[in-house]
Image (cartoon, rainbow, N blue to C red; front, side, top):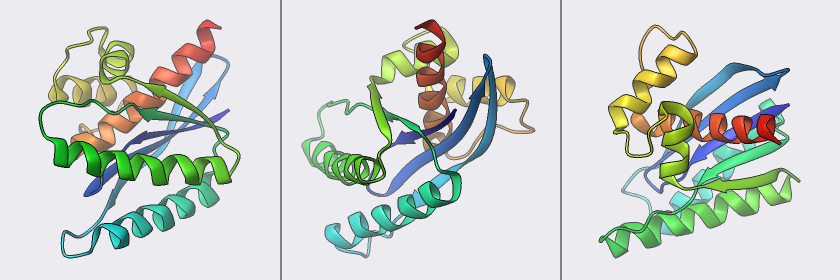
Amino acid sequence: MRIIGIDPGTAITGFSILESEKSELKLLDYGCIRTSSKLSDSERLEQISKDLSSIIKKWKPEKASIERLFFNKNVKTAISVAQARGVIMLKLEENNIQQSEYTPMEIKSAICGYGKADKKMVQEMVKTIFKLEKPPQPDDAADAVAAAVCLANSIEIR
C-alpha cells in the first residue's frame, strides 16, 4: 500500500511517499512544496494544490497521513496552516485518498518512541530507519515521513 505523509504549511508543506508491504516500509520519495512569500495567500494555496496534484498523479497513494493542526500562540500562523490543510484535504478527497490525522505528539511517538522529541531527533530517526546518508532537510520533510510512518504503524496494529 502506498501512503502519502503530509506536514502542512503555507510557506513549506512537507510530503513523503512510503510503500508499506508485509510490515516492511520503503521510502520512495520525500521533499517540500515551497511557496514564495511574494505571492498572495490565494496564489500560495493554488500552488500547493497544483504541486500536490502532481505528486498524487506521479505516486498514486491510497492513504494519507496529515499532521493535525497544533495551535500554540501565533493565531496568524494557525490560520495560515489551517488554510493549507483545507486545500490539502480537499485535494486528497478529490482523488479518493483515505485520510488519517495525527497530532504532532502521536507522530513523534511513532517515529522516536517519545512524544516530546525535538525536530532534530525526528530527522535523525528518519535517517536511521530508512538508512539515509543524511537527515531529511528541512525538518518539514522529515515530519512528513514521520507522519506516514505513524499511519503505516497504525495499519499494522489493526
